[in-house]
Image (cartoon, rainbow, N blue to C red; front, side, top):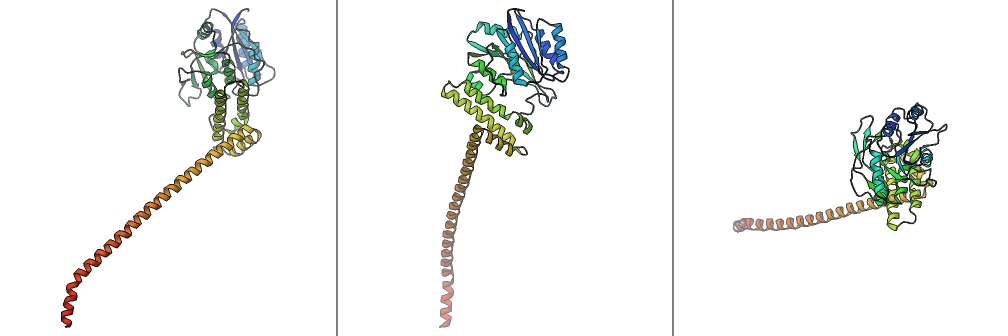
Length: 357
């Protein structure tokens, strides 16, 4: 097929429960252009690759399967799939997520065609939980203000909502996570970020997903992925090495925020302190941030101690004043008592004097 307008890039691994729903979302798109779906399966051990093959036979002009014989990892699988794309635009959707609007591609293409100064666009998504442990939600909550600076602070673009103007991907690093955040930033350096305020896809949260353990105090997750998160920010620094001081400061703050979050999470777990110690030893940035954090905590402790000391000092002063007031009152009472006693006993003394005479 020639003149591909959009390349859908989909990666999968052991997603036999979900992959068909993702593929259905691709082949059901109603568009006025040609598109392809590069579906790269990373050597799944279940029936995921079989299902992909079935769709490829049924939709040979759309589904372009890449069925790996050896597992190469999420990052390498995605980057290789991106390099295979031939379309003017690229849309992402992982094998366990799905699209809910059959006009999604058309709407995003129309936006980018009409706005040459935009390098990507995205839309809200539904976050759904397989085990219903949390209610469904919409992400992102905000509806405007989607700038590069804000994207450097946090990843507000869900993967299966984005469409990029295709670039060359030979320089995308492999040893980072989350790689979609890096890709958003990589494309955002070339133009503005567009937002279509229509919910057109769903992001599935389930126990088999890579991010399932990221919010819980789970050392298994951070043992595996903490270094990749640290690498992400080092690569982002290189990506924006010629940017303004303000941009560099935002990146540094985002890195610090993430690392502090990891430290706080791991602090709640057994052996968490040892994990953080090892992480700091192997990463100068972590060591610096950890040192700064400890310094800040020490300063807070000293401030609390000083505040408690000041309160105690003030209490002592107030006690001294009360004591002084008590002494004064006691003295006055004693004087009054003596005065009354003198006046009361005076007639008695006079009577005693007469009788003695």
